[in-house]
Length: 309
Image 1 (cartoon, rainbow, N blue to C red):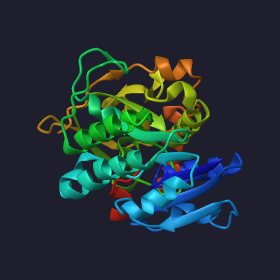
Image 2 (cartoon, helix red, strand yellow):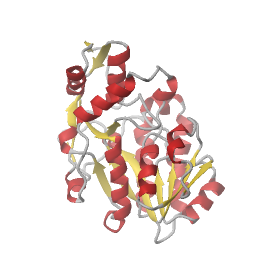
Image 3 (cartoon, rainbow, N blue to C red):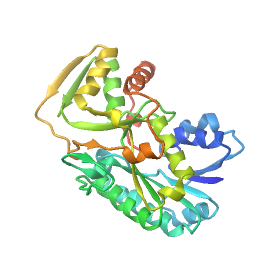
C-alpha cells in the first residue's frame, strides 16, 4: 500500500513511519521540516521511503501527493494551546485549512485517517465516550474539532488521542509526562497546578499502533470517531508526578493559583478502541522510566518544547 503521512517527521510521525515501512508499505512523508529531519534519519535510506519537504498549506503539492496514495494519514498540525496561541492564524491555516484541502482531494476508495485529540471534549462531567458532546475551550481544541468535522464529512476515520508520552526520534517536552520527567532530572523540582485534574495518557508507540489499526480496519472505522487510549491510563496530574517521584526523587510543589486554559478534567472511555482490539502495551511506569533515562542525555532546548504531531 502507498501511504501518505503529512507531518510524518514529527513526534508521532517519526514513530509511525518505521512501523509502516516494516509492514511493507511504501511511505511518502510530506513535512515542512520546521524541526529538521532528524526524527527520520534512521529510515531515510529505506528504498520505500520518500521524504517531500513541503508545506501542507500548498494545495497543488497536497493534491499531487494525495492522488498517488492508497491511504492518507494527516498528522500535520500546530499542536497544543500555547503554540496555537502564539500564532492563531497559522494554527487555523494548518489545522483547519490543510484538513479541508486534504479532504477535498481524497477520492472514493482512499483511506483517510485524521489525528484528532481528546482536548476537544473540554470540561466534561462523567466519562467521555465518542457520543459525548464536545466543548473545545482553546483555539487549538477548536481548530482540531473543526478539522475532525471536515474529515468525517469526507468519510475519514478520526482518532481522538489521549495525551501522548514516551521517547520518540523527534522528541517533545511540551507533553505533561515528558515535561515533568525532564524537570525532575534537570531541575530537581516540579511545580504542579490543578493536581487533582484527571487526564488520560498513551505511549507514542501505542498511538502509532492505533494508526495502523485505523488503516487495517478502515471499512469499520470510516466516518467514525474513536477515542484512542486505555482506561488504565486515566490519571490525575498528581498521580503522574507521584509515579515519576517513585522512580526519581525530586521536590514537588503545588501551586493553587494557576489554572489550565483548556480546562481539561475528564475520564475517557476507551471501550470502542478495546472492541477493535487496541489496548496499551506500554504502562505509565515503563514510559516514565524510559523518559527519565533519555532525559539524562538531553540538554534543555526550545526545539523540544514546541508542539507538532
